[in-house]
Length: 502
Ligand code: V55
Ligand code: FE
Image 1 (spheres, rainbow, N blue to C red):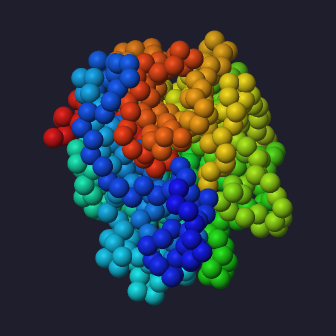
Image 2: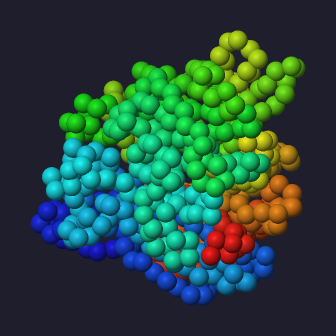
Image 3: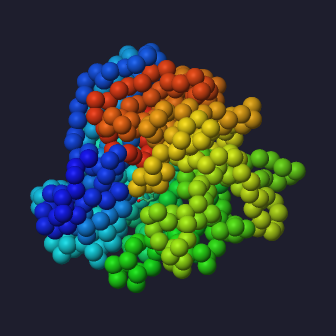
C-alpha cells in the first residue's frame, strides 16, 4: 500500500491519485490493469471434462472519484475470464468500454459523480450514460453480456472480451435499464428478465420481459411498484414470477439535491408481488411481509402441491436492515446493518389471506447464493453460498463491502447437512458457481468454482471444488500471478457452446 501523502486525499489537486479511503485500499485497491496470462500455474489437477469459460464481473475504478469519494458499486465494469481447456487455464481481464469509460479515458479524469446521480456529474457529460456495466454476466442465445441494473446490456466478444457495444435485443428492449439478474429457464431456453426505473431516476415502473432462445424480447409487460425501490434480484418458478419490494427507496428531490440514490425507509413495508407467468401482470397478487426485510440475492423459487392448492416457496438471503454500509437510513443515522441469512418464505396461494410463512433455511450468515442451474424454477435440494464459520477460522477485517467471506458453504437439504470449505488465513472466497460434471449428472454432482482473494500475497486464485464435498478442499487451484478486483456475479459457458458460436 502507498504511504499516504498529505495532499493525496484531495483528488482535485492531482487527478491521478486515489484518496486513502477504505474503498480504494489494500485488497480493494483499483487493479486497472488488463492482463493476459497463458497457462496459469495449477496446483492439483483441473478435471479433464471441465472445458469452457468462467466469466465474472467486477467494479474496478479507472480514475479517482470526481467528488473525492465513492461507493464500491460505482467502479467501472472489469470482466475476468478464466478459460479452462484440457487441464490448462488462461486468464484474461478487460474493462467494458462503456460510454462512461470512453468519455473519462479521453478526458484522463473522472467526469461522472455519485452513483446513478446525474445531478452530480461534470457539465460536459450532461445527458450522457453513467452505466458502468459492472455487476453480472449473461450468456444467452450464444451471446455474452455485461449487465448493470441502471443501464442497458453491453455485449462482449466471448473469446477476446472486446466490447461490441450497448445492446437492446434487436430493438425489442424499450427501457433504458435492464436487470443484472435475469433468470434462465432450463426447460424452455427462455430468459425471464425485468427492468426497473424504466422511466429514469426514481421511477416506480417495472417492466417484465421474456427473451426467446434466439434473443428477441417476445413479451413486455409493465406494473407499478408500491414505491420506487432497488429491485436488484427476483425469483422465477415454473408458473410464477416474484418480486420482493423492500424499502430501499429513491426520491427524485433527494437525488436532485445531490443526496445518495438510495435510503432505507423503515416506515415502509416489505411487499411481495406474485405474478402468474401465463396470465401476466393482470393476475398480480400482493403480499405483505410480517417483518421489515430486504432481499439481497436469491437461490430459487419452486412450487409444491398442497391439498388441492399450490404453495410457492422463495429461497433467498434476507437481512432485517437496509444495506447501511452503502446507503444511509432515512430516519436513524445510528441504525446498524444486520447480516443476511438464508430463509424460505412460503406462500399458500390457495388461502385468501396474504400470509407469508418465514423460516431460516440455513442457520448461518451468508450471501451470494447459487444452485445447480438445471434445477432452477423447480425444487432444488443443493444450495451453495459464501459465508464465514468462526469455528474454522477468524473473520477478516471489514472491506468496503462489509465483512469478507472466509468460507464457501454447502447446504444439502436432502441429507440435512451443512458443509464448509475454509479458504485459509487471510483468504476470502467470492461468489461460487456450480458446473455439472456432465449433462446427465445428478443434482449437485459437479464442480464449484470461485475466485479467492489471497490478501497477504496481493493475488487471486480460482479454486475448483467437488461441489458435494467442499470439506475435502479444492481439486485444483488456478494461481493467478496478480490480483483481480473483488467482484460480484459470474457465469460458466461450456466449451461446446463457445465453439458453436465461433
Ligand atoms: C448491487 C450491486 C450493484 C448495484 C446495485 O449487489 C446492487 C447488489 C454492483 O452493482 O448497482
Ligand atoms: Fe447481485
